[in-house]
View 1: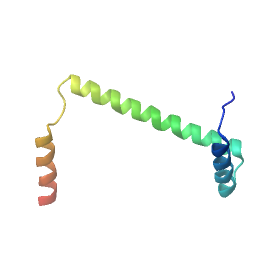
View 2 (view 1 turned 30 degrees about the vertical axis):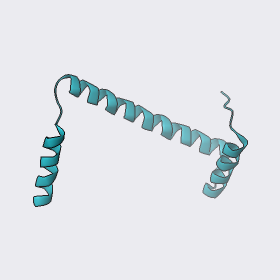
View 3 (view 1 turned 180 degrees about the vertical axis):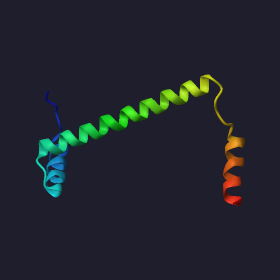
View 4 (view 1 turned 135 degrees about the vertical axis):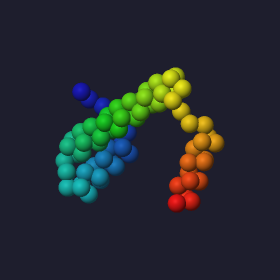
Length: 74
């Protein structure tokens, strides 16, 4: 696989890799892996929230506010 980076992106990647003492391709692989993991978790959370909303499992803003107020009273 090949990706196209702007010169600015290439320079920043090289600088970050140098600062971390890593090879550019190693850092790029790590960054992509982290992004994919984060994106996968985010999509799963959104899907779960949509499912809960569809089943009526949610709190109103008033309920959230009341719960927060109770937390600060303790």
